[in-house]
Image (cartoon, rainbow, N blue to C red; front, side, top):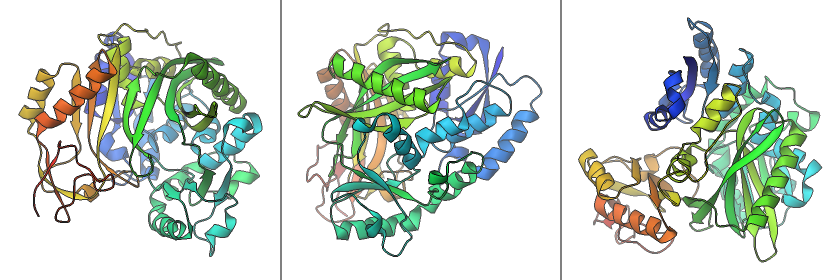
Length: 449
């Protein structure tokens, strides 16, 4: 049996891993659960690192692999834990060249300059932050390290810049302090040393097109992409994820071009023996692709999609690489032709009046085969009580659905929402559940306040 430690284990993903055929050979151990590692509500990162090492070193047996599928701080801690046990892993520096947004753009500019936006570093705490920005309005402003689009703002004028800077100043420490703690374990070039977690990056707009994510890995220097997932967005600035849909509908030659760009960059930074997902935009009118960002992990959001379509969750890819094995991932062996993860979003604050019971959720799953539901809210809370949200919406649930056409996916999702009977009460009389979009789809009923 292989002893596999899961950093940030949660019931949903652990259950998916246990369904893998190879799981009969694995003994999973929890190296902190999700509540302990999540940003904004978990343990301090120094505690995770120091206590995590102590737990691993005191284990009475062989540590065969250490894995995780969450963003920061999980993804950032993994190579540090693994190198203490001489386990297969990308180097810590290669990972930071993906995760540190400014450092990543500097490295991208060296090898793939034609596929990245204009950018510059911004110190939000200086007296006049706008004077550092060499990019004309509009642009995106975001921390050099964050997750789930938190503290990312579309800036169109001086007023929006001022508002964004104020919010960033108030909240950036939640990411900056733990990120700066971990950066001490890396050898940083001089141009990056001063741009720590308290900095932001401004980037010109590249989001005029279709977004997708390539899921892949590098094993002993060979880059392999095994799936492309479309990312459909919504909201005031088209910045909030609406759903991830697999397989991608982008033209084959565009996906091949994205793969070539990916290989060039990962080879340049020396990324090896690890999974990745890399996000691109394709502007069909200009016939141009843009690299958005690189994540040094699998996307947990895509795991059920691969299970539905290919017949196996790509947790298997993560596990194989962590054990030093080359992945052998299936293709189109699942029960459905298409799959999607829908992010049920609300674009204004509200009270949660009623949520479905566990019995109602299970009844919906039985009524609509190929469906999984993860609810993020409970009765009596405000949506603004949710943590780790993007700057323009609240994600109240995740709904995973398999089907044999895009139409079937969308129809199932609509019917599932109706069946759940979730009720919200807007904070202002007469305000729809979807204030920013100015409409309500009827799937959440607004009751008078």
